[in-house]
Length: 358
Image (cartoon, rainbow, N blue to C red; front, side, top):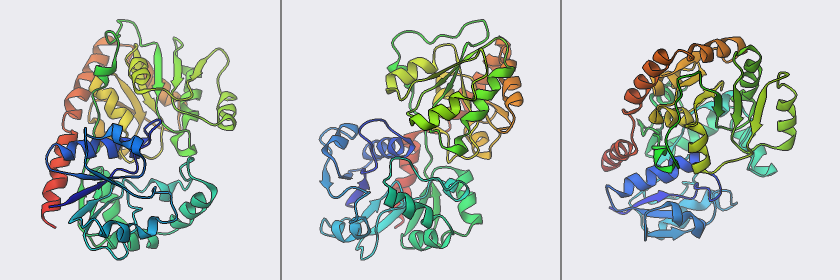
């Protein structure tokens, strides 16, 4: 079987969620079967197996993207797996698995900030109604998604007639990136850590406002890149006497170091496809306080505390409850146990078994 995997979604500066999913799943799949990777930049190879067999075509943002299947036909693939659903499939001569991560952009239609103005307009138009998505997905042979929560949403929205499988997201163990021991003091954790975008639905506002209700004071670390205008908006919300650090983007090593420095992982997001930062925190035994979302319950089980994303007071109360060391250890132990249900190798095996049915 000539199995192709679309690795063009790998970013070569900082991973976002799609980029990390692409790299991790692609590597795991290659551990179980020969894979030919589709790339658009030689730099993407550094995130793939050594000496990975590959073909190079146009980027996913190219105007040629609708013709991707015609380009790939010349390489005679049997099956192509795309970790997103945007690949052009017209005229294909191979089996195709597309991935729809979640339905977040139907609820919150702000497009990814890295796209140019034309792509942003097309993105908004695409998500005005379900019919473009239905047309896209039904042109594939199988649809993958990253969680059971997303699978149920896809089914309930009747987005496709194709079979929908769960090829779950999973977390790396960031411990290998840490220079020194994980810091877990007996006193209340002093740092709050948020890793994620600053789109409106990610709701960093609640995290910042919660600082006014937390005693003793903690430092809130906002790790991701942020545009100056958005940063100014959020800075105006910082309560007097509170400490908020905008890191403006961090390396994986810096992320791991900050997350394990006497910290609580926090997210007040109002919509998620999986919640990879939550999963990464659980693997490390870092306590977490997150929005009361179905997907976060799926990822964390009893291993996190859940708060109302519209209530800074509720977030503050849940954070304060982790001051109790025994309770904190109970929560983190449950989180480590539950997150063990997810792994990239398991996801790769599920995907490979599904591919064989095609």
